[in-house]
Length: 536
Image (cartoon, rainbow, N blue to C red; front, side):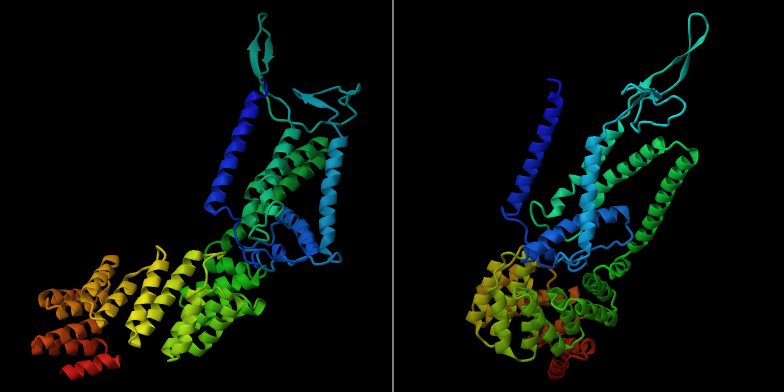
C-alpha cells in the first residue's frame, strides 16, 4: 500500500509508452523504417567485427560531444565517423578506456557507502567516530536540510531560534536521476535494439544533456565540500565559473552557424564534406549562384562519387543551363548509382525526347513506370515522377498520332497519380487525345476536369475554346479565349489562338490586331511570328 502510488505511476507510464509504440508501428505498416547505407554505414556492414567495434565506439563519441562540444555538425551520416574495421584501430583504446571507467565508477560506488550523514549543518557519528572535532574535514557531500532562522520570543523574553526545515534530495538521488536522464533516453539511439538512420545525431543528446547539467554541479559541490583548504575550494569555484564561460562562448559561436542555411552547411564541411557541400549547392542554386552551386556539387562528388541525389542535382543544374549532353551523362550516373531513382529516368526521357531520340526516351519512360514504390525513402515523390513519366510517354505517343496508346498511358498515370500531383495538364492532354479521335463529349469532360483542378490553367482555356468552336458554341468559345488573355496578358500564344478564332469568324481587322500583338510579345518564337505573318 505504501508504494501503490509509485506502482500506479510506473504502470501508466509503461502502458502509455506501449500504446505509442504500437501506434507508431501501425502507421509504419508494421515494418521497421528503411534507411540507405549512407545513413548508417555500420548497420549496413557485413562484418560482425566492424559493426560491434563501431557500435561500441559511438557512445564514446556522444559522451565526448557532451564533455567537449568543440566539433559540431548538422549531420553525422556517411563517413563523418569512419568505421572501426579492425582491433588495431587506435580508437579502440578510447572505447576500452570509456567502458573501463564506467566499470570502475560502478565498483567504487558499490564498495563505498556514505560514512557520515549531515543534518542541520552538523555531522552525526555513524561509525563510532566524529569527524567534526576541529582537526578533520571529512564532510559528506549529500544535500542537507536547509535551516531558515527566524527569531521567536520565549516566555522569559529570550530569543529562541525557530528552525523550519526544507528537505532537499540527497546527492545520491541527484546522481541517480542525472544518470537516468543521460542513459535511458539515449538507449534507442545505440543500435542495441534496432538500427537507426544515423551515425551520431546531436538531437538525441538534448535530454541526456539535462542529466549532464545536473551531474556536473553535483560533482563540483561534492568536491567543494570534501576539500579542506579554502584555496582549493576557491579553485573549484573558479573552475565552475570558467566552464560556464567556455560553454557560453561556444554557444554564441554555434548560434552564428545557425543564422542561415549557408553558414550552417559551411560549418559542417570539415565533419561531413560530402553532405555539407551537397546541401550548400542546393542553397547556392536557390540563390541563383549557378557557378558556385556547380562547384559545390562537384566538391560533394569528389568526396563521395556514388551519391545518386548529388549526381541528379548536378544533372538538373546542367539541364537548366541548357547543357543537355552533360546533364544526360549525370542522370545516367545517378541511375547507375540508384536504379530506383524515378526522377532521373523522367529527366533522361525528356532530354532524349527533345533531342529526337524517341525510342530511347520511350524506353526510359517505360522503365520508370515499372519501378515499384516499395522500400523507398520518399514513395510520394517517386509516384509523382512515375506519373510524370507516363504523362510524357503519352505526349510522345500523341505527337506520333497513336492516340489510343496515348490514352492508355494517361489512364495508367491517373491510376498511379498521388494526391499531391497537379493533374490539370494530364486531363488537358486526355481531352486533346479524345479530340483527335473525334470523341468530343469525352474531350469536353476532360477539359472541364482540367479547369476544375486548376481554374486558371491557360492551356485548358485555349483547348476548350477550340473544342467549343468545333461544337458550334462560338460565343462560349470566345469567352474562354478572352479569359486566357485576361489570365496572362503577356502570353503571345493566347492572342494567337484568339486571332485564329477571329480569322475563322471573318473578323479580319480584329484578327490582324491579335496577330500583331502576338508577334510583338513573342518576337523570339518562330512559330508565333510565322503564324502572325500568315494571318496578316
